Amino acid sequence: MPDPTPHAWQLLTARLTILTNQRPRPTAASLQDDSVLFHHVLHYPATTIACLTGQERATITALLAASQRQRTPGSTAAAL
Image: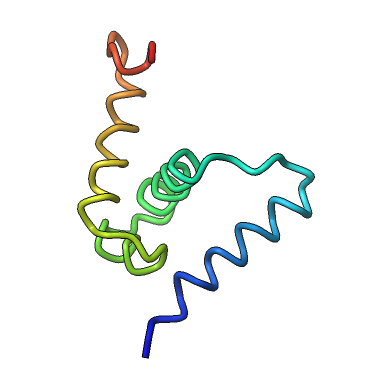
């Protein structure tokens, strides 16, 4: 039986987008924001975030690393 958690997360984020009158964001940007929130605010490890969002652990790890590069002063990734 597939894990219903990722589906529930997708439903929640879609509903919040509607309720807050936000425009839908590209999946990668939204997933990165969600991953950063889970990791830096809630202190969830990448494995837990992967389970919640239905993504591979490597994808979450890469998104967290990219967000760290974007926040680092002098990083060239922030200019992209």
